[in-house]
Length: 224
Ligand SMILES: C[S@@+](CC[C@H](N)C(=O)[O-])C[C@H]1O[C@@H](n2cnc3c(N)ncnc32)[C@H](O)[C@@H]1O
Image 1: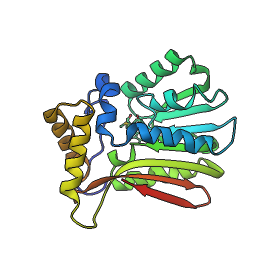
Image 2: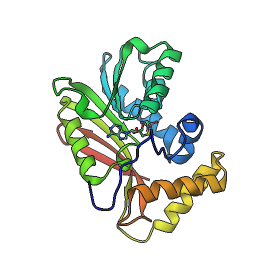
Image 3: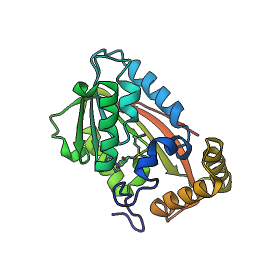
């Protein structure tokens, strides 16, 4: 594990209580709803009616809710090490009647054999919970399971070491949560917990990165 950094466990020490996840997630994760709109556009733009999608960090069920109902031939495999978060995803699949197109796997990428290959992989709001060496291992594991020309979509918080943007960014993050209905003290506590769990080297510098890649290594980053 990288020096000074710990992994967040959503079963034993979730950044937000799992039973409140659906209510709170959009306030905590900047750009959440827009990201899912863009993610859906990104996948639909691949023009593959029978898309095999791997969702890394499928807990919560947002990808199931967003991707499957309006794309009736897509199939989704989701991996997640949190049983509690996977429970929410399973509930979403059943509620929407799409469970026959969903396979949920308890674990991470290594729980899938490398001969399980996918047209596209999403890894949304996951990487920033991992120490750096685990991030790299996860991305390598994803690469091994992408078909040639397969597409990868990553959205993650990231440390920024250029310029002194930290005060601005934390202020914006706080205001974002409040504007979506989270009480100020609650939001401040969530920020504090996320930051203390993941970024000791430059703890005050976090931004959000939206990154789309093709297995061919073409890539296009956007950051907010
Ligand atoms: C903030 S939630 C995001 C869930 C979903 N992608 C979304 O955007 O609503 C982060 C999820 O990543 C999962 N996670 C943490 N480490 C992981 C890993 N190594 N592989 C896959 N998922 C992981 C957590 O258990 C949690 O369910």
